[in-house]
Image 1 (spheres, one colour):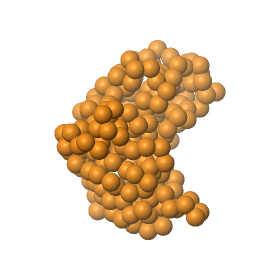
Image 2 (image 1 turned 45 degrees about the vertical axis):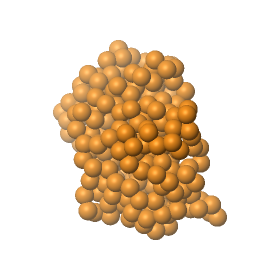
Image 3 (image 1 turned 90 degrees about the horizontal axis):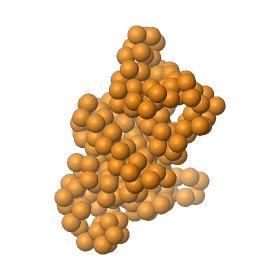
Image 4 (image 1 turned 60 degrees about the vertical axis):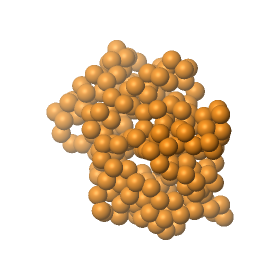
Amino acid sequence: MLNVTDLNVSYGAIHALKGISFSLEEGEIVALIGANGAGKSTTLNTISGILKPDFGTIELEGEDIAKISPAQIVQKGIVQVPEGRKIFARMTVYENLELGAYSLDDKEEIETHMDKVFKIFPRLEERQRQLGGTLSGGEQQMLAMGRGLMANPQILLLDEPSMGLAPILVKQIFEVIQDINEQGVSILLVEQNAHMALSIADRGYVLETGNVALSGDVEFLMENPLVKEAYLGG
């Protein structure tokens, strides 16, 4: 479904991604794990069109999308939920969700997606007239994910969804990620909480300083001594 091949990305003189390759098949959850600075967020930002690669290809169902605009990428079904939520604090929950559907023209379709988001996140329906900036951290993460779902994505790019959340909320967010996946959305998950990420993923890739250091199914990765020592607490 999504194939990334020999992706190279630079920030000025800094070579952030050094020829990484990976794939995401339809219906999968694939985890990208690694330390800060490994290139995880850069990878998502490049797939979503925010960054442009030096070279390499990003193919969605055989079409190279590496050089098209972020808006066109959303229209093709790839939506990113950014690190740190980045909701609109002075807009209501409902208005934030509406903005997620900016690429859609059909009002009935937008309302259908709104109903779907409210079924996944009942708390958002309760808070729909509340300003986004007044929500708790967990509620803001729900809002960021709900906003992403409003565009009806085929692929959801999730960047650090557990960041700053209490353990009980982390568990809840990861349960929701599984629910979204079971509804037919493929997910590329960037997450520093490697144990949680691998617990729900089908496969994973370990990034180290812009390279894919290791890849495989989750059973392989969770039993790998290097992964256990570096990312799973031994």
